[in-house]
Length: 427
Image (cartoon, rainbow, N blue to C red; front, side, top):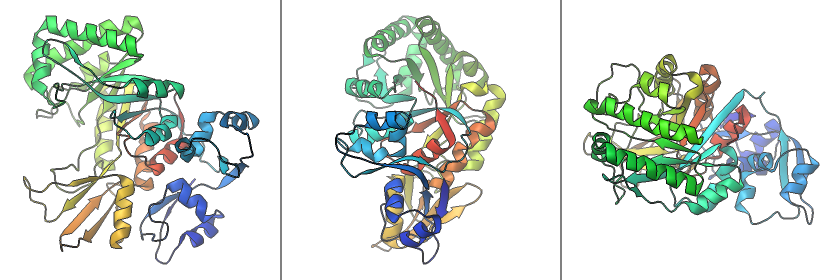
């Protein structure tokens, strides 16, 4: 697999000739939003086929997989567009094998999603996942769960071999975030036990295989109660064979102050949980100054602290699957960025005819443009290069894998990187 960065004067035809692949292959693999208007600095993945299959009448994916001694999931990973079709069409070409890097490692790959995810995006994403995490179950101060309409997603996930992990966050019935809910529950043992009973009952009823505790902005004075809650959950889930997962803020030391960090005790929580997600994203955020969402230098610093306090085999790296567009000049307290998918970021660069630059320290692409009203903007996003750099931290630091926040948009480059580097752990 090759990552090609578009140079001045290049076209799909000249890039294809350079690597011996067709322009159609480049368009399909990258789901290019701008095939006739490539942007200088735009990266794309080149997969050089070594074996392809042309569909004939009456064939199914299962038939084709059997004939090549591979799995249907492998075909879907190589050809995710197939998941968006009702069936195969005669004459379609399926990529069976291509020139890949040697598999680096086995990795657990999770994906967060909302119940309203586009079903085609969902089906295309499933083959690359170990578990799906549907966001989110909230709760009341009495310990009742706020219900979630997730049965069809769970059923479809199981059909693809991707079981669900239940996500629990302090969200009220109107789905607004409220850390006070968690803190009230910490000190009310009766409500806490009722909540755990309801969690277990729902997990058993719906087929969840574990619980992800996503409690953010917990006041420092509740740190020990938070740890006790996690321990209480683990003591109830483990005998039933359920996993306990906890999402943790991105810390670089145990001395970090602030409401986001102080209650997230890496050594204590890491000793209890089966899996921890380190939320290595949101350096660049909606209300913050323009910068990469997950700069590699910052991500590395957080993960190096994490592996010094938590067993490597428990750690998942957080992967952002979105980008931001900030109007300039940035004014703190006033400027609000626009959230984009990474594909939309590429399309916008093409629309305004700009050059994409690349920050070597952050290992992230960005560009400037001026809109129709004369307002200057800067866009930071992820591409094949930045995703490759982030995912290669998994084998380097011997992590368990990654969790993607979120899979609401299908980003081909991210999934091709995953497929190139890892054997994906089965759920």
